[in-house]
Length: 114
Length: 110
Image 1 (cartoon, each protein chain N blue to C red):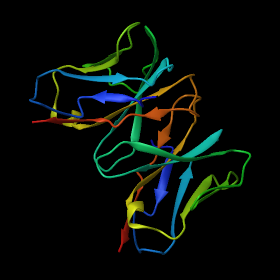
Image 2: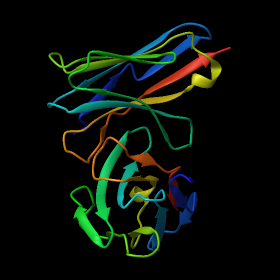
Image 3: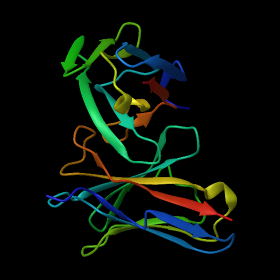
């Protein structure tokens, strides 16, 4: 059973470009969570999604950030008009149900904004 | 603000020694979890301790939880070079949100 997959693993964008980060949950998992890790800090919750639904986006910046988890395909975290402060590692986790007990983390996408 | 705060921020020990790190948190929890992150990599789940448990063991890991002091400790015994990593505690103030501290960076010297 493959784990949580994220791609790309590294992404470099210039200021003002768009960044798209993908997360494929573990097989059988219908709950996806995105977390952001700034340098030298712990992970911060961004958003919790189920298939076709955003359950909690309280950790997402109000502007430029959006997330989706369509019926088919991976979950996408989209950052429009990136700025240097968006440089961070973005981790996706998935679980079979909406609890913290069984969140399995992917390897992360490291975004660098130049 | 972060729910969990690890202490110390960094720890350097000799191979074979024990490493102890602490985590303090602010609000009541259902569970507390410890994760390991090797440099530039993802998170590896180490152990979960429930709020009604006081101590838990897993291999060379020992975790304690004191809910009256809102604190937890992680002990790694007989450390190895492969234990070099950052260690994070994570609490669950909400059912599905994990709240992480800034981590303790452990360096094990050969």
